[in-house]
Image (cartoon, rainbow, N blue to C red; front, top):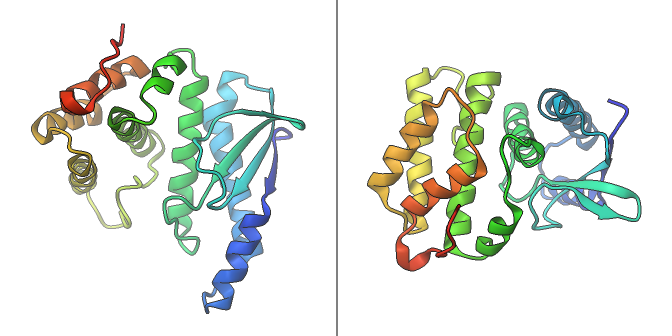
Amino acid sequence: MNKPEISFHQSFDEYFKESIEIGMDIDAEKVKGRIIKLIKEAWQKLIKRHNINFINRIDVVIRTYNSEIMPLVTRDGVVIRLDLGREGINFQDKEDIHSYIFHEIYHLADRLDPKFNMDYHKDAEVKQKNLGKVINVVWDLYIERRKFYIYRIRPIYCKDTKFQSTNKIKETSQNSFLNIIDNLGGDIEISKSIFNKIWSLSNLITYCQIYDYSMQICPKDKCCSVNCY
């Protein structure tokens, strides 16, 4: 992987300096090496097949940019900002790093995949609304289902899958998904049905289908009224 280049924002070193100062036993250079290796692996498996060659650099940051992983045009060309601090990632757990990096790069892969048919206009319309949050949760579920069944990577919903059956992982993922939806005020019974649809998928779905599922989950008084089609 000659392109993109992988760099670490100063926020990354500052985070590890603070962690060491409070007594955490973390080898920052070892973690950096692990992150670089996992980004390259995810890029090879998820992005390279789309023949994407316009992204020049991936900036690894921590709690600096509250933005989604997507291409940004800068003076240095097109850059991806990969924030590894927003979800409380455990840098001492290799599987946790692996799971989170694949999750974020899967979001980027979907955005760049013509078959996913990302609708940036609709996405922008609902971004600050409750529906936008529900869309992200449903999209996350779609990613976790593929990540687990295709690559056997631990879902972000589970902290330890070493000795868990596939059914147990599904149950844990469903409980976490429903808990998030419940906190957003979504319909739990409809959410259970949609979870089972997505978790049992054997085909790809589009952004518009995720939008539709989210409209079913989100109470009418909290949702954007924009039509999907």
